[in-house]
Amino acid sequence: MAEYNLSFSHLGFFVRDIDAMLAFYRDVLGFFLTDQGELNGRQVRFLSRNPKEHHQVVLMTGRGEDQPTTINQISFRVGGLGELRALYARLVASGAQGLDPATHGNAWSLYFPDPEGNRIEVFADSDWYVSQPCKVTVDLARPEEDLRADQLELCRSLPGFKPIGEWHAEMRALMGMD
Image (cartoon, rainbow, N blue to C red):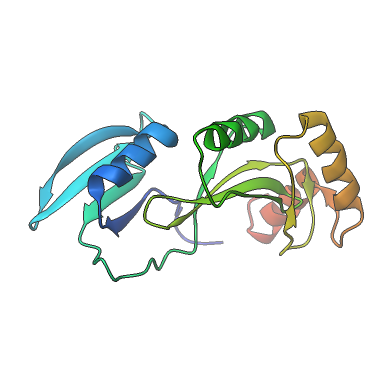
């Protein structure tokens, strides 16, 4: 077990168009602007969805027009499949492009690009575990009960299938947290 408790807090990245990025993270993903200013000649915006966290996302000017993203994905968890489906419907209604809904067995995910091409993942945990990696396309417009039934059927057919609680117990033991 580690000698200290390390937990993820926030991420920051350089952007080309801070106003467009702020609008996306605020208006589409529902973050709140908690602070803003200038640091070393660069504009900075701090955003959060947690009143105990000053910032969870930091946007800072400085990404060159010809610089590609180096981010594989920025992942956000929602409270359940219904919330993920609501975000999916909102994105579809807004005309968003590049939507990639999928299941990983242990979660349902929705991948899409932000305005500067950084890959966003919003996911909802499922009740099951299967060995990873696993990615199967799903239609988040289908009824929730159908998605859940399909998920269980898929998971039962994959290696490592077990209830997520069993997997959590195994991980607690592995990490010396029993």
